[in-house]
Length: 457
Image (cartoon, rainbow, N blue to C red):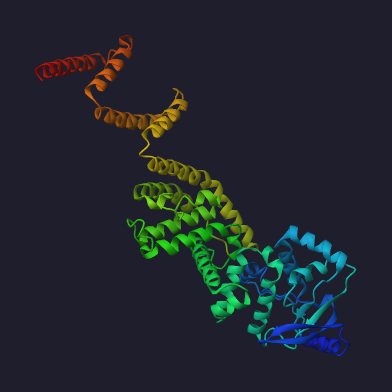
């Protein structure tokens, strides 16, 4: 049935007796509309419904022409609506089977659903229902898209069901309306939110768009799933750190450093890194994050890029001609997670330890006890590759030696005696004998001179 035939069919229904009436806020005024029973089979889903906007926009970006009045696309949209919240849909389906419609729907005169797309999809799954109750607007979607957007957005965001939307959709909806020259004030009114909230939605969406651009996934909004909390945190950091908005706390960085923070955060977001640990990068709490401390941040950043850039360099080019781009990108991201997650985790945990040590620098006993505990459980055997371990032990030895020299001569001599008494001369190899004899003579000279100095003083 083409558009003209659908409009003609609606005209026939409008000539019948309505079953009820309903008041709607339409074109800035409260208006009474008649309610009719309409055949369910003729309904056309709104491809830009707020519940699935990220999905349909992503499909269009891939070059698909979504013709929602065709059977093939009707099935695609029904699948998207079902997957938008499967557990909730299952619950609502049982409710519909028992009670049919509790609310009247709204459609255009060419059968496009303005609200209740999800419930229409569910009702289509119940064979015993062939009709639905609806208000019929005397207008098509193309004739006044902005007014219909206003009506749709207001109803969708007002109903309790809004809590079950994919979290990403509200950010995309705000951006989509703004791109249609709808003002922030109007959007806030339509979405039942404050102006500040809508401005925040747009800021978060801007960060999301930067993320997609960073990965080369522009406008493929499906790749934002399950990452909302991290994007919220990152947007907050960037809004404070760019242009030194946080200079009242620390001022070592510039905008280039903030760019690095954003890039590194994007890698953790891509890996779906757990939100609470993710906050260690730059959580807006003084001294509780890496970005606060220049030395720790530089170390963390250097280690990150050394480990992650080689992984990214080996990634395959994106096949945008893939018949299922979402699966292709999901697979690409999954491989990145497999290759990078342990490295991301280790680097973050290592620097969380460094940050903790920095915070407890005035509690030496606590730090020394931690070091003792760590060394005590370290296992080093001859079959292990211990070059790196030995190198770090030498660094530790130098640090301890430096600390010892800061103490009294008595403590140093006591330690030297303990070390000398621990030596086993039977383990001296022939190759080392001459060098060791030289050391012993040097020790004799040093102790003789020390003895003279002490007696003289």
